[in-house]
Length: 405
Image (cartoon, rainbow, N blue to C red; front, side, top):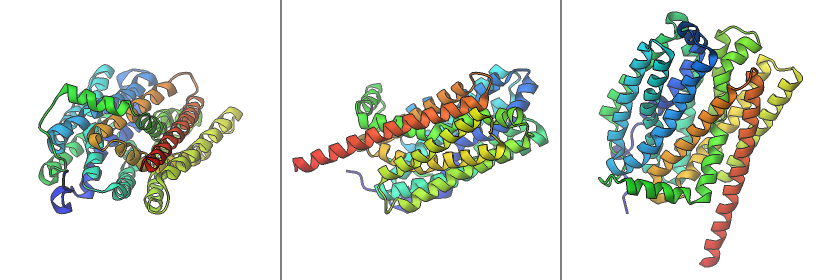
């Protein structure tokens, strides 16, 4: 049985964990306001530049399948440093991309590197904290982390105004190099690497998790509850500028305000986690998202959608996702204590794969607002069903253990 490392020896600074985790999400959010400018500069339509968001999410998903279990074998630190180096290289390649296919390929490389921070930052928190404190630390980490994506569209809009869409990737490359250097100096090894890399072990770890209906339900439910918002993020520039007739600068402002909801939701979970069951937090948070998506769809169908209504509803939708996010993650990581790294990676894959699906779905048709509202509502309803199923199975298993004693 491994001893818990002391905070001074085994826990990276929280502010650095925030930067590490941001490396995976910042590149997606900061580039969103640049989509129309990139489409014009590269001579392609909206679908082609929206593909840079979808492929980025796919890269995040695939990479997390590898980083989680490999970090169990080789350690968190070397995988993290390698991922950050790949992220910086992908950012430079995107900055220099001459055509849309090259940009899409560079975004995939960037995502494969950036997802190291998402998968390993969470695993490091679980390595160095007990179950209850892990929830509170994850909530605080998410709260602080959401300030970055909340500000990222504003920063992206400013960078586009100053230097065009390529300026976004200049900033991301510099941030990636800085995070790599800081991690090299300040991140210790938090796991207990086995030193054995085996495809068979990897397959068995994933098989054990996938055989658990509780894990699968939490992974799908948590993924739907927390990444459905990607559908709105990808469609927002076109909803706000083309359908609602507002200038591009309002895209960054609107997305920044919306992401405040994630911070508020995480703050609520951090405060309530000590006095309320995690299952209740999950269900209530997702229920808020269901209600907001339903109102969003109704307003669009009746032709009453405005920028103010869109921002207000999406802020509340994301608040619900923010409440559910750390609770779902904690549930996923405690289903099977033998495979924490694999669970983090597989859950990250589920989140990002679902997010990529939602982003692709919202690109269909000629009405981005209608498409995004339908995707948001469908995802939130599926998430609610899966979470309720997982909680019932967990309760039943707990009752069987008590009767067995």
